[in-house]
Image 1 (cartoon, one colour):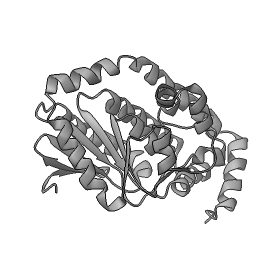
Image 2 (cartoon, one colour):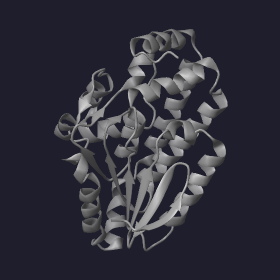
Image 3 (cartoon, one colour):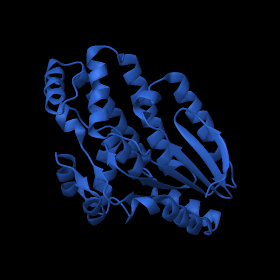
Image 4 (cartoon, helix red, strand yellow):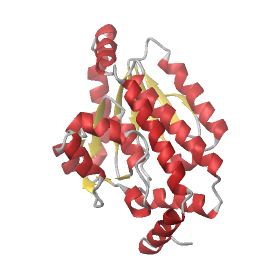
Length: 266
């Protein structure tokens, strides 16, 4: 489908077909992105095709092997036990802030496609995009509940604008999984498709969008994204709150309980 592989980083593999670029995210993204050299490599590479006027559509394709809640909790276990430094945690937060802002403001139409168990970091990436396609059988998870944290990635900015403040609050306070059908019903995804059709249907959508004149496509996106200062502020406040919480005894107690409940203690 995408025969022209145009690059590879520890974060994603990149493929190009005409006016469409596909970024296939790799597994273990959260751990990998906390490495500063890798973060800089990712953004340098991202800049190459975002500055290319011949590219009109970017597909951000989620990794197949994500472990959702368990992966999220295990990451913070490493922070709590000292095997992941606070400096690396800061790098992760900084990189996520930059990536979310870039997705929301880039002068390309961005389609997000995903499957499996999806935690709130990856949901944030999806909501920063212009269109979202989800495989049936997928679930969104709010694992920050399990260890007493707050979400990271701008959910408190995106959700109220998409579904209203009351529905956003209800969503963010949910502890159970949100199914693909529910996500479609509350309009945080635009379409659900069978897992074996995810890539093809996403490419079909991208090809349709690529037919829109560039000035129209990017002009409409620019008009719809005039209030990005609010997003920047939300991302900053999230980081402030998370810095405070992860250094607290309460967080360690919540984490310890979650490790036992989900069988993640090694």
